[in-house]
Structures are given as structure tokens and as C-alpha cells.
Image 1: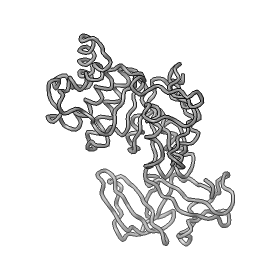
Image 2: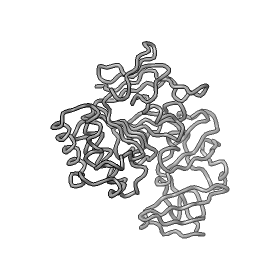
Image 3: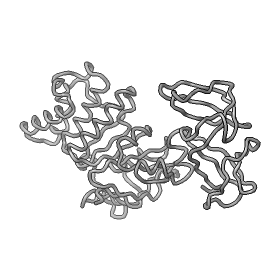
Image 4: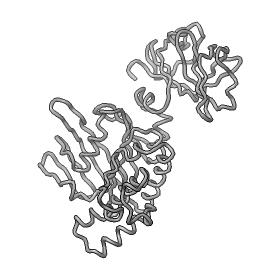
Length: 352
């Protein structure tokens, strides 16, 4: 059942259209992520949901309540929306203890002392901060400060949690741990999460659905696996994960890479959706194998160890392809001749 609805939302800053006619529906209890390049409008969208920005057109509905409606000139202030909010900056008050940081929004709401204590303690327990209740922020690590922000958000018993790049200031290992903690908190409390991030792995790990945005518009909304395996267009393909994308052409019902035609065809069949003789070759680095024979020939220009992965740069003709292989299979070295076999290819026409 749809819980958060954005209906034909448009937001302008002067002559710049930040969001144009955006309509999405988010399910109750869903983790819905928005990803895209800087300036695409994802944080603006989140701020309109939060009530920090009013909208120029459209309306926002949560449950059975209208929160913003341009045609009715109606707007519910952010402090009355009862959303939990966690941002990139930890935003903890240095002069307050952990307990008081978490209790502060409850005091603003003028809850009773007993209810403030009960909710605050519960939030601290669930974020594993109960033993730090009387500690001050300058004595905490970055991950602990972010937990304080999470505890403060869940203490108000939100139905919707808004998170804007909440883990970007943490180191990679701690960021990975916090992903699962956020997901565990969602399952425990049952709130809906609307999440903005630049980190694609973060979005993949947390989300039930992902919205990929380019400046001012939505490119695709789908489950993480479908976003990755069935990208709607070349923008989505290139934005998610490492990619090879090169101009190609059709000749005698075979497909060649433009700058590497002498290396041989990369495909012997033309996809039915491709019209004309110009197209784009697209392939994930992990979907290419290196072998002694078969496929098109290339030369290893660079070999880089990245832990369990070896990152290769293979030159074919006048272009270089990126290939990623398990380190146990990385027997080719710089200067070696090899053959490339493509396990999975994507093709985009001139309009795709």
C-alpha cells in the first residue's frame, strides 16, 4: 500500500528547474533510496518531503494527510510532520550529554518526564548507546555520534525516517556496519525510510527500491537487482558500477567497436531493438574474461591488485577496456597478449 506520495512535484530556483513533474509512491515500511550525480535534485526532493523546502507545483501526501499542496496553498511546517531526520553532519550538541541529545526533541514536544525517560532509554538501548548516556560528544567516535543522531530520530517514534548521506563521514568499515544497523532498526520499529546517498553499494545493500535520477528527472525506479541487471538506458548503466561504454557500428550483420574494428567483431548478431548501423557497446568489467584464445585480441597495459580483485586495463585497437577478475584467475601480466570473451553485453542505440 502506498504511504508516501509525491504527485507531479516541481521545484524551481529562479529560472533553474531543480525537479520537474516528479511522481513517486513509496510503500509503508519500505526503504526507498534516491541516487544520482550531484545536482540532480535528490536532496531537494528529500527536503520538500521534510518540509524544509516548499514546492512550486504538485502535492505531498503521507498516509491520509496532505503535507504540501501548491494548488491549495497548503503547507505543514517541518516540526509538525513528525519525521525522523538524520543528515550527513552528525548535528549533536557538544554541551549536552548523549542522553540529553536524544531527549531534546522530546522535551520540545513537551512530553512528560517519565515518557521522555522511557523513550530516550529505549532509543539508546537499540542503538547500543545506553552505556554512554552520560558521555559528552567530544568523547565519542564518529560512528557513535552518528548513532546518537539515529537514536534522537527514532526516539520520536517516527513513521517515516529521512536520511541524507548519513554515513558519508564515516570510514569504509564503519559505514558498512552502520548500513546493517540502520536496516535492523527499520525492521524493529517498522518505519519507512527515504534515503539519499551517492554510495551505490549503500543503496544496493539497504534498499527495497531505488530511484536513479539525472539532473531534474527520474531515469528508473526499480528493485536493486533490476536496476543493475536491467538498466533502463545508458545513463543508468553508466552511473551504477564500473562500466565500459564505447561507440560501435554494424557491418555485414556483425558489431565492431569503432576504434578497434581490426580486432574483430564483438558480436555476431544485431539486437532486435537496435535501429541503424551506429550503436554503443556497453559491458561491465566483471563480465569480461581473459583467455589465451577465442574472442578478440588485446594487450595488457596495466594490472592493479585491489585485494581480491585484479583491475586490468586491456588495449584493443586504439581503445582501452577495463576488466575485473578474481585475483586467483589473474595470470596475465603487463605486456601479455590475451583474448577477451564477453559474457554479457548491453547495446544502446543513438537515442538510448
